Image (cartoon, rainbow, N blue to C red; front, top):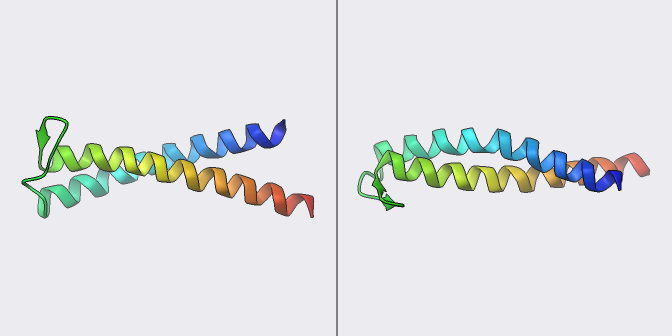
Length: 77
């Protein structure tokens, strides 16, 4: 049971760290290189910022869960 809690907490921490990073990278990319990009009714840096936020949270959650799982496996051996 504790391994599930550890993975969920790892995913939450990873998502919390990845979301702002994705937002900033997406807004930077959209403001400089993708000014014509449209997503969810907005264009440019706002659109790529939203997309970066979503992708950053998803990737951060996956990495956080994987790190939490890896630490558990190393702790048992």
